[in-house]
Length: 296
Image (cartoon, rainbow, N blue to C red; front, side, top):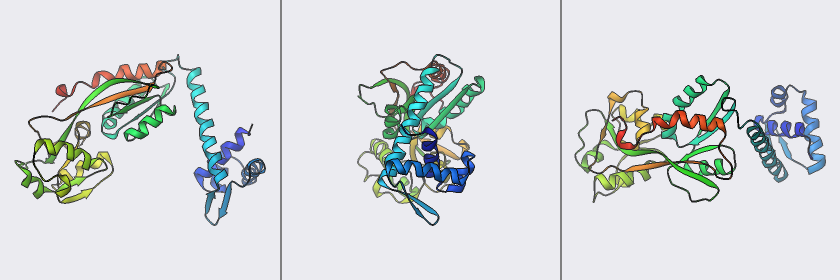
């Protein structure tokens, strides 16, 4: 078995990219860091190509880094299992899409304030990363927009969230020509979301790809900033709109038939949730009502 300290040194070296910073991070000497890497290379072969101001991993180095991640995940799972009955101590890992994440994060902070022994780790990610994060036990809880059918997962309905057409405050949008005049503020899911919603609100229209582009932003919390300044319109989920700090500068153009997505809660089916995850869910679930009950 490889020495855990050597593994920790190697993983930190890859993360820091520098022997000096690694030594400082681990409170070791540079000689000790070099010795740990040397011991690993004696067992596994060359792990690093040392270049000026850069370290490059060999195939064996990549394999060892993956092993370090597996060991770290296993250690985390062990710690969780040993303390899973304590509802007010330990870590709760949650991974979710960005829009619902904007609504969740303040609530998670409130849970942690009420229970200081909890450490809540929350990551924003698309559906496929959420699935992998839960299946690989890196996160105990996950939320996705598409319901998975993997038998390893327990899946339950968590919330409903409409897609919304959001325009600058005061704009009149009565037809497709108004959207052409405004132009589209795009984001990573923008084309897909706009295609689904606009085809319903404006049947027979040329499609979102034929609209002029007025910008692109990949940060969920900033998508409505250019909209609020009159630079264009966007389509995004309601929780992202509700989290925007200046609601008076934007408005929603409602369609005759809303387009509502379901958000699904995931966790591993083979074992029960930890008591701290149950506590966290019990605290946040009441805030996520059916879409028709959400504040407009």
